Amino acid sequence: MRPALPVFALLGLSLVNSLANASEWPFTAYLDGKEIGQHRFAITESNDAITLTSEADFKVKVLFINAYQYQHRASEVWQNDCLQKLEARTEENRDVSLVVGRQQSGSFKVEGPKGQLALPDCAMTFAYWNPKMLQQDKLLNPQTGEWLDVDIRRIGRETIEVRGQPVTAERYRLTAPKMKIDLWYSEKQEWLALESTTPEGYLISYKLR
Image (cartoon, rainbow, N blue to C red; front, top):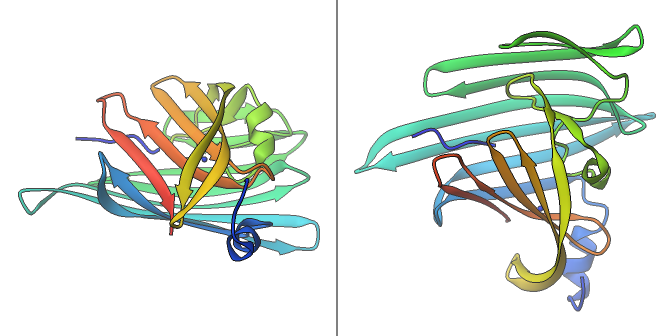
């Protein structure tokens, strides 16, 4: 089994403050409702650059045996909402893939399992934390190094539970080759949750902890 990787209304003041201008998104990950691990996103700022770190650890057990293990580590440097540098390492069971990229000579050069690519000078990854991602029609997959066509559409307003509280959120659906990802954002465009249906039909969901 190879699950694909792989989001306000009346809230208490404490929850509003914790969500506004967030610089860290610690998620618990579930597979068909069963907890399988954690995925943490964190931002640090220095001068006019933003560094995003992403760390995921999943384990799927069948009859108390580790049937699937997934680890992902990525570092992305951003400037003016444009990707400047990328380093990512992904391990699925025993398969390891590396993706590196850098802004160079007016384009973003990427090298990964699929080979080398030269992308536009202002490329974006699947940067769920940045609502400007919702305006893109192509995104870079930091796990595979692929430059993918994406279709992102607003689904509508819904009420979801965030850290034990009901929250009114806008839902969006991102579709790409072998991907269907739903994302929820607050009215201040703070990323709240994610669900992804894998090609095998499994449901991966992220909930803020």
